[in-house]
Length: 294
Image (cartoon, rainbow, N blue to C red; front, side, top):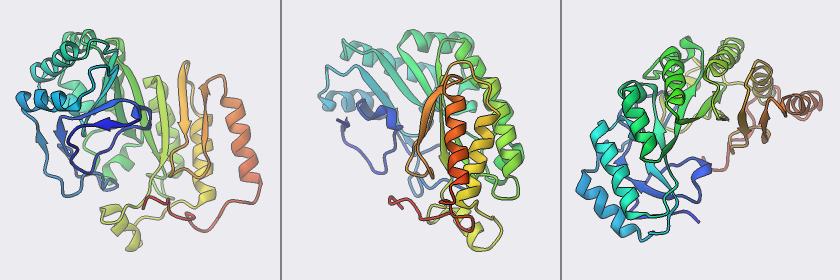
């Protein structure tokens, strides 16, 4: 059961953190300008001061918590001393603490030395959730992503070498119809270099109020149809050469839910996508119905 203390909406957390104690130590996102993202629209970014974090944890009333997720966006960007102090506090207050997870960016990882990343690992930081979105630099630039695929790949590899786990998210359809092939190819190549422990493929959705939605309405961005989205997912999956990764494409945005371990289940997943593409059930002209959460 999801629990947290004094939540300020909106609050987002990965599906895998459903049973974690959520501590909202930051509010919003320090960048908050990606064209496709409406997660923290209108939310002024603020970091809670250390005494506020201590008070937040005290109010949580979960001394038995074993897993903690630190929200909101890019908590790893905090100065090393502040983040280390938070992790030490969690270790002192939660005797059974096993791991702490959070959102991170390539820039935030780059701001920490190898020694600092290892020190955070010793303080029970385990999984960094990183939004790669695409390995296609042109697609990232068009979506006003704050950092390049090259930076994210390099820093993901370094973080894992320091003992941290990476859960990487990519967005199907981010290149639109124009760059679908390049997006799938470059994203697979970036992931092959990263070798993340966890990989999630979501489908980009034009969230109301975002720049992406305005671009679609103006005819400057062509969304993939349902059929093309599954084609792109198949191309991405076929290009992956991962040695030990849990793969999920079961978010509500996806056309079809998929889940498996790579490389063991890769052939099965590709066969399922091939059967779907041949079934005639997919809309070839439109993206299909919007998810219920829009």
